[in-house]
Length: 313
Length: 313
Image (cartoon, rainbow over all chains, first blue to last red; front, side, top):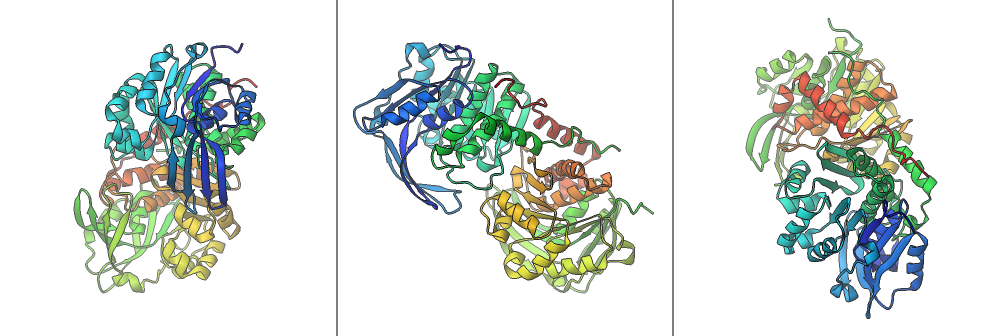
């Protein structure tokens, strides 16, 4: 049995995506926030997954996850079809349009945390209904670190429940636009300060290809996005980011400020691999040496020689 | 007489802007790319300015520049009115609409470099017609570093002349959207590589509040934008960035890779002060201790503890 110390529990959606990309149409792509986060985190640590799939969900996907060290004891198979999303991306991949959303078995999803998962030091709440995020937190022992993602739909639709989630979690991961929407503040610095007053000690503002900023007691901390030559599919990049972050923290086994800062690079690196392929294809093939090499490149891309002073008055 | 070693020559527009901001209307604001760049660079080194103003240009602005160490021997006073631009910013300051552009005396501007400016080690060509940028380069001795800015208008309107400029300069500063437009490449990494093949050994891609990326022989290098609590006016931020970059390099007196990387932080810091006030107002009041303090904050915001490895396989 793997050590309890470095387990990441991931709760969220498992889905099929029909992706209409500038490069072609990709139907029945394995997707869902929890899937992306689990595959990302499993590059670095053992993972426990809680979600729901339908009777149409091929066993080969479950096998792939298990093979990566993802414990699927919490993946419920319900009668009906798996959650399905269809979207079309713009030519430059900068925006996308939802064409169809079929919640299917996900509509009645009530996360049930298996007893063997209750003691998980790292808990990642994917972007699901805040009521469900609260149900998960009620079912687990207080973790070393709980993080949650959210979106515009819950910000406008369930503000009271979302406020309760914020009171209970340690870290909110949110994109810049949604951080502004949630707080009504025009700059990310103000939005982050406002969110931190509502509960989470830490906030990470995701900025897509531009990277992310962490705000905590030590101040602001930046990680850039990796300057890729080619991007194929931005789907799931934010979820891969959160998974990489948690995977790195679980591997380090601490949530000290420096550890979180270091984890930000793993998060950004893993997200950069994610967008190099359609769906989770690239994420599934990333090797530890590839990840280490990209992390080294990040260090080089930030190396200014150790001093910024110009040497005279 | 100041040393020739650390002089920055700035050539470009001097203007009046009528700014319609969410916070109010600001008529007759001192503006123009060369103005912003000169004021920014003068925080760090002596500056030589070449541009044209009309008979309506108040002497107090010239006096302000001189007082900052900007040599205005190259500022021609022509019969007619000063270049004037009127624009309205969106509520979130993320976009702007040009309402009126009156070139006035700028329409016939032909930069004449005073003999005492011919030997300038650092030459900054603001965003003017590429034919004029070439005329400037023909009038000066080969500098230690020549940099140029450009824009969509010249990219689509004067591609052949712009190509000649690229062959002659050492560094192109350009925003991400325009880099994509210039090269037809979808990622900034590809666009930067493509631009470097056309001439300049170095390219800096500006990304507004997200900072900038330098591409040179050493690879990619990132500098974030400073996470400001309040932004008042983004006008001239890119020009202040270029001015801060050149000012820092002139002060260092070298163009070594590490020096350029260090200068990127000064560029971003100066640009961050720029947007804190309407027009050049904040830029004019920045003190050396304030600049040093912001540079120190940058160092803290990037400090990940010196190692990114997680310590085990």
